[in-house]
Length: 57
Image 1: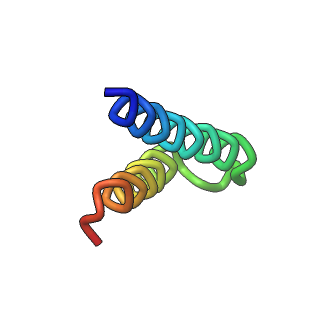
Image 2: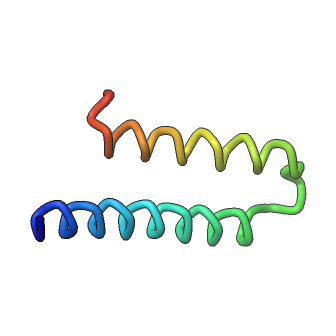
C-alpha cells in the first residue's frame, strides 16, 4: 500500500515539475511566438512527459 502511495506521489511530483518548467519556458519565450504556438509547444511537451512516465516510448 505504501509503495503505491510512494509511486503515485513521485509521478505527481514529476508531472508538476514538468508543468512548472514549461510555465517558465512560456514566460521567458519571445513575444514573437504566438499564443497558439506556445499552447501547441506546451501540449507536445506534456504529452512527451506523460508517455515517458507511462513507458509508452
